[in-house]
Amino acid sequence: MKRRSILALSALATPVLAPPVSAQEEWPQRPVRIIVPAAGGGSSDPIARLLAQAYAARFGQGFVVENRPGAAGNVGMTAAARAAPDGHTLLFAFAGPLATNLALYRDLPFQTQRNFDAIVRMGGVPNVLVVGQGSPMQNLADFVARAKARPGSLAYGSTGSGSSMHLAGALLSEAAGIELNHIPYSSPAAATTDLIAGRLDSMFLGAPGTVPLLRGGQIRALAVLAERRARVMPEVPTAAEQGMPGVVMGTWFMLLAPKGTPPRIIEALNAAANEALAGPGRETLAQLGLELEDGAAGGTPADAERFLASEIARHAEIVRRANIRIE
Image (cartoon, rainbow, N blue to C red; front, side):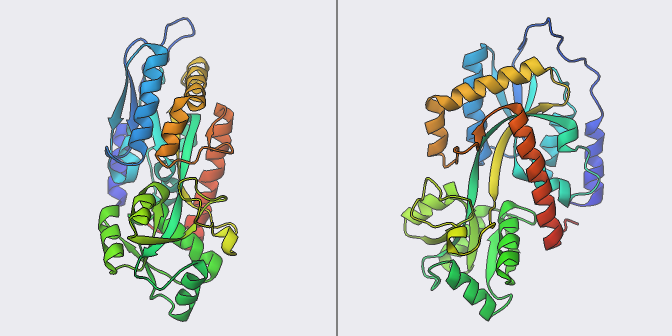
């Protein structure tokens, strides 16, 4: 996104002067909107809607998901940042707009930690290195050997510069000492179509999108870029198991509120999310392909804040080392 586009967003970031809900006022007093900085139908949408249903049942008020796509998530982030901190606007976002974009774009009209309070983590999705079924590459060693034999000839597709797929390729390239050819696509469907047809060598797909193609025999999974094997594909080894420790990339999901939202509201939302994660909702999320174990979902707002800070720093370092730029 060009610099002038970012500057145009700043007009939306004028602070709202409405006061926050006082400790004596009831909450929620009206329907609560949950802004998702992406179009409907993406990976974040069903999670946000499940959470909205749980909140509506718990608090007796409507929780409405509002999709605000545009500018790689920056439009929705800006809208949420300027909302009154009264508990009636929340943000459900993911790694790209919350962490990666801070390192990619100049003059953003928001800063995640300055403008938002983290409420709770809602799981994560690892990237998976995949190739077409007709590819001769059977594992990560084959992939690295091919890349070293012909530097720059092995291509991988992504959903755009700075996406988790792009960062995954950059991270593996650095760890393995190889040069890969990054090809950004306008959509994951277009890249996947080329992969299956043999016109694209590889991708770093999210685990949920990998499973149906894998089960259908259309692709082959070489490595999960996570600390442990994915629950939805336990037969696929991690990059670490194949000699590439530290090659961990994917996306994760988090609920936040505009900075200054009363702590009692944040605590109530956190408690209700943890209740939902301890009930049937946990299995529903797992079936969507989310990894929920070992602190990836639930916990306290302080846990979410610590994780957010660490990921912002980690993504910034990956972007810096790979020299990824958005003009």
